Image (cartoon, rainbow, N blue to C red):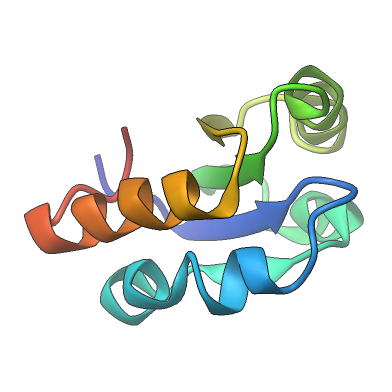
Length: 103
């Protein structure tokens, strides 16, 4: 499905390398709106479709998913959960190479 808005969110506690290194190819391919401000989701127009790809470690994944659904209850939440940066990079690079925006 194509979404009107596609956001990418880094879960709390992740350093910028998780985006700049791990998500570089993914961003170049799909160009999601990168933010750490979940309030932004609430400013998308009513009736629009919203997807949020979340980069998270297992200890923060549930928390950030709840926060996203509070901000925009109808959002499709694409959780990308790994324990370390190299695993995240491999997962996102694979998606970019295969043209798979969501997992």
